[in-house]
Length: 78
Image (tube, rainbow, N blue to C red; front, side, top):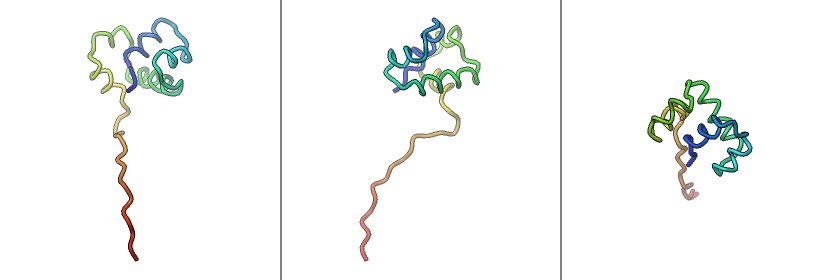
């Protein structure tokens, strides 16, 4: 699971996206997307540090996106 709190904290310290991705064990694209959503939702570290992890996740999660549901293919008899 992506650690949004740590991404925001490290970004506030001026750490590069590449270094943040290495520290948080996620892709650089994930870091860029999280920071982009943080700008869109006007979520900065100063206000995020007082929020719970769930509140941060809820604010940064893309709207209307849910986890994909995978179904095992059935056997087709002819």
